[in-house]
Amino acid sequence: MQKNSIIRPQPKGERLAVLMPGLGAVATTAIAGVEAVKRGLAQPIGSFTQLGHLLDENGGHGPAVRDVLPIVPFEDIVFGGWDPIPDNVYEAALRAKVLDKDLVNELRPQLEAIKPMPAVFSTDWVRRLDGPNVKKGTKKQQAEALIADIRGFLEKNKCARGVMIWTGSTEVYAEVGPAHLTIEAFEAGLEKDDPTIAPSMIYAYAAIKTGCAYLNGAPNLSADIPALRELAEIQGVPTGGKDFKTGQTLMKTTIAPMLHARLLGLQGWFSTNILGNRDGEVLDDAASFKTKEVSKLSVLETILDPEKHPALYSNIKHKVTIHYYPPRGDNKEGWDAIDIVGWLGYPMQIKINFQCRDSILAAPLAIDLALLADLAQRAGEKGPQEWLSFFFKSPVTVPGHETIHDLFQQQSHLQEKLRGYAQRVAEGRTSKVG
Image (cartoon, rainbow, N blue to C red):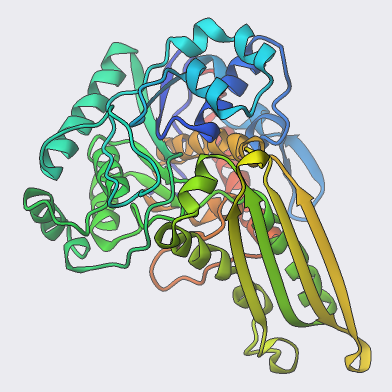
């Protein structure tokens, strides 16, 4: 990327496709939210691209992000997606029971118009869900069908560009294997129906092959394998992930930096969650939960750095559990019991009970990530976008780079990147509407 190159502006009326594998609670809440904001029925609370401001290097309040960066306006977004359950977005939103029924009914025509394309889906990878709206054939044929879906969607809806953001379920735990190491091995694996190639990897492959930025809102490996990193470099496509930072981990990455800054010791951190939505049902399976557990457990050690402070953080007991509890629906509840140590070794405790709404927290992240990834692509970026770590539980980094989990360090990196973009826009005398 040319650091001083002009960022491609966003001409007025030029459309962006936002494609979502998994039209469940998060996706339908995001889509309905954008429609509600467009019609003046609600405010985009929680959205950095819509309400955020740039900060100067000293933390001072600067201009609104939308005023200085060519971010696609909501009016020019076209949504599409895939799901094994054939319900349109209106029906899926009612089933998810996240949003008030009156609001969903107010948006019915716009939501009914969005129908899921047949999904690449396998109960080998998500065991607690199933549905008839799925693609048949070999994995190569499924990948080719996805590529045709994307190209057809862009053409039909007259979209100049596309972004894919995974809003589907957590897949069973997987590690990098031989079929994931090179693009040649991966494509050979598609030919042979290699069982280690997950549906999320096929979606990431199709997105990258068609030049669409790919963001991963779940802890699946997805694009975070050497083969797809290689492909993203070749295709010049930005990628990002993993796992939307919403409830409990958002609290953890806020409080742990405070303990580190004040040099308070930590003996143990017990975290438990109850939730009753589709995500909770999927995570009730031990193999899918392990994928989420690895994502959640990666946070504390990186923030607290026990090598520098062994007396304070060398023997932390960190436990995470998730329980499927249908009566709670999308209203997730996260409990944290934190055992800390203060002056002279005296013990203290912090208790947190975060009664959050899972999809309400995730939906603005999905929209922000789509818009910022599109901005990155117009800026000439490719491969893992570390500056988007602010939005993820388990940020993907360039091999050899340190993963940053501290929310405030992540915010600093996000702001630094966007200030650089704003400077390039100003130098190029571009504006957000072209």
